[in-house]
Amino acid sequence: MRLKSQQQGATLLMALIFLVVLTAASITAMRLSNTEEKMASGSQFRNDSFQLAQSELASHVINFNDTLAKRVPLQAALSKAADPITGFPDRKAIQALTAAVSSSKVSNQAADIRYMANLDCANLGFGDSYGLFECRQYELHARSTLQSGAFSDQNQGIYFWQLK
Image 1 (cartoon, rainbow, N blue to C red):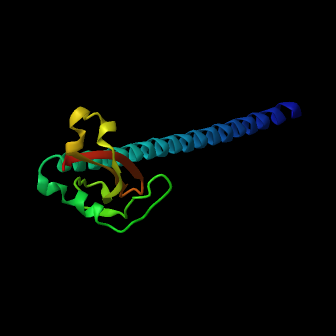
Image 2: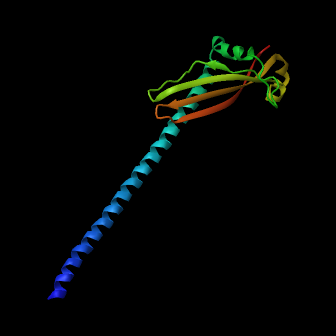
Image 3: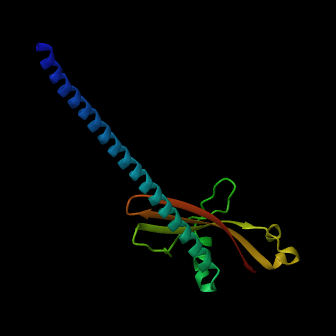
């Protein structure tokens, strides 16, 4: 009789140990799913900030090609103080631009342009009429920062030519 009462207590003990193991496994699974959710949302925030920065760059390129009045920032960048680096001895300081894209997700949207160099228009494929044009290289930069803290810095080089 004594042996039977000891076994009944062992069953209860085993059931409690099994319950503790299942609870620990459940808590671990919940923590992993929360981590995966945070990683997915972080990826989405980075993608959103990248798309906003790309939209900013595209908007400015479209504006520069629209009318002469919208090319004023290009001339302003050309008149900035020198800021040379290796390979670009004629590089100028940054000219800030007004942000062209807005979104409720953005905490800060910034853009700037920098004159980099005069180019030989013959190398850009103007054929026999290359002497009629003045060709310049600029660097366009945009930074989008979301309210979540995710940000994206994007640079794009542009060539701009106009009649002399």
